[in-house]
Image (cartoon, rainbow, N blue to C red; front, side):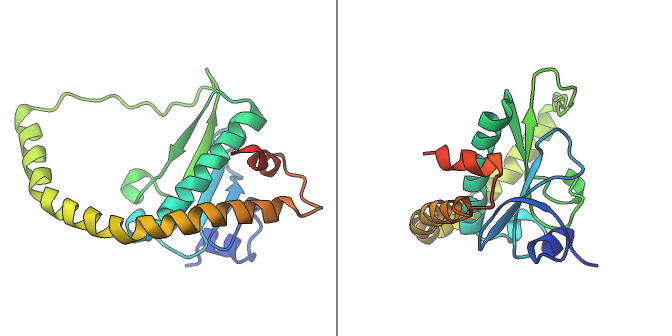
Length: 186
């Protein structure tokens, strides 16, 4: 089964690319939830977030944040939802990790609300005990990963994002308003 996002990244499938560099692609979603719905995904195939290296996750969210700012400015929206549907149980339709940026306007009719329910005390205790027991594992994993990735990320992400954005903007035939807005972002 061919992956739609991999095919777009390779240029084998048409996609309205609004941003692309050596690591990621951002496309205007054809079957959009709202006008200006953008999907950001890595060029390399990863099914779920847990498979994506931390440095690439940081980079994707850095670019998604800048695209969100560009969407605010260029489309005049009042908000954005930045969503990861991580796995089929979370509604993921394409088996390729992605971050979706959904432009929002007041009273746009889009319902992303969920109603929290009050958990029983036993359910809370069980969840707390289980997750707290995993806490040492969390600390080991996060502590180990943070040391080397954080230093790498400062060098690679910030420089690459600026360099790649500037390179895209310098193309004379590129007249996309979102990319022009990216240039204004500090």
